[in-house]
Image (cartoon, rainbow, N blue to C red; front, side, top):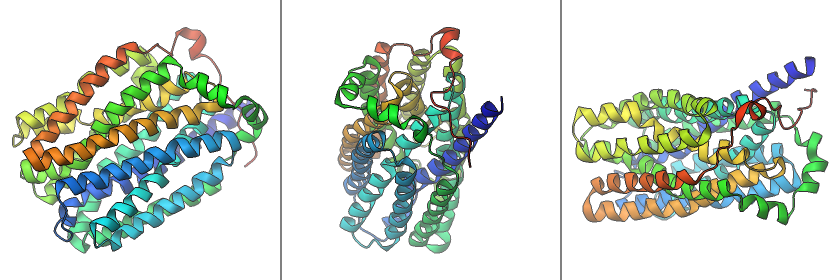
Length: 415
């Protein structure tokens, strides 16, 4: 019983730590969009160039995620990799403040995306290894909720106010500090459960294991869902601040306030979506929330300057940010062996972001050609395709036998 209590205590610590880390990482990534209305007053950027910056930031994330996940699954050292990735992320966020040209911004933000791509798959694989099926959805939902709380609810209001008070450059200085603190917290509190299962994991991890996992039906379908959903989500994130200020005619501070209200509801969705999947099953949750994700961009397209669109954005927009927990993390880790959890998670995230990134670039070109409203057409079409694909999923949460399984590894009890 003592070991179980200690395991649960460590499980809670990991949830809290990764909640904070992912929240600040998401804020680092989201800050470029939040501050773009300020940046374009200082650096000449077209919608196409804005799309390119966000696209290459996403490509950096996409390439780094599977690369370092495979290395961490094969070699271990997950704690060390997490620590240094957080440090590099903090430094690159700081370097953003010195941008004077489009080229500089493009290079720094691409590298930032790469450093961030290292972190989430490894974090979630560590968390999944100490979570039971009955707590897996809740735990991952809470980690992803860090993005909603810090990156969407609190961050936009703080970042836009900092941009107004001190300028966008100093806003990036403030954004870089929390990631450095999160790195130190990881160094202090993350234990190494892989030391308990390292021999088994390294023995089991080989090319054949990866191939068998990747050809798993759920993994392939989640990759396809991820391609369309990640492209739609990051397009939504990249252009929504500009859409609200240029099409919906909100001021920068009003936009920040709307984003914060939107973020508060996103927190609820971030927790409720994975929790509901623990109750109704992964597949019904996935199909249902994909259908609901189409609503917000369609309403913004039809009623761009109406209070109705802002209400819908606040109430339902969080689904767009929150449901990736299902196809990126929960369904994949329940579909593959523990030895390749981080790899499967990162491949879905990486391939989805890599291919989906071109949706961001395309949307920027369309926005220059047809106006920003064109972006709100691309997004629901992407979710419609993902919705149709999701019917091919195989349910991974089957009955009491699955629900009552213990955690995959026993965490070490020493501090």
